[in-house]
Length: 193
Picture (cartoon, rainbow, N blue to C red):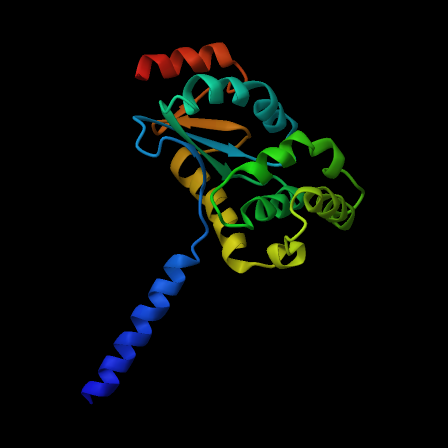
């Protein structure tokens, strides 16, 4: 009986550790221990989100992320199926890095178009494979763990912060209005330092 109990305990802890290792990592940048935490809820097909990544994020990175004053986490809030699939691709390498995410925003006009989701997926696959040739695109789209992670980001956004549009910034658990206004964002962050 002791051997069976031991065997079940071993199997439980083994699978528990395997599941922990395969958890989908958050897309983070900056000092993990920073006093200021920013969460960005965004949709990869949202043109305002792309503008945030092209115009506001570089300044934020230079002034606060690279200096270690803040940590920033990019969370998925897909507004359509194209964005949902692109979010899964951004998380697919599961390395916590934001390279693919930024690349997709920089090239949004090249892939986020088409009459059907099949057209969008084809464009998305072509653009992503330019930088990640070894990525299993189809495998990423059907990965249940990644899919659940993306959906849970959206669900928690609504429950915790009443998010209904993108991009939405949360600074130290408080919603920040007008994320496109870097001057106002910078002042808000400087008050928290």
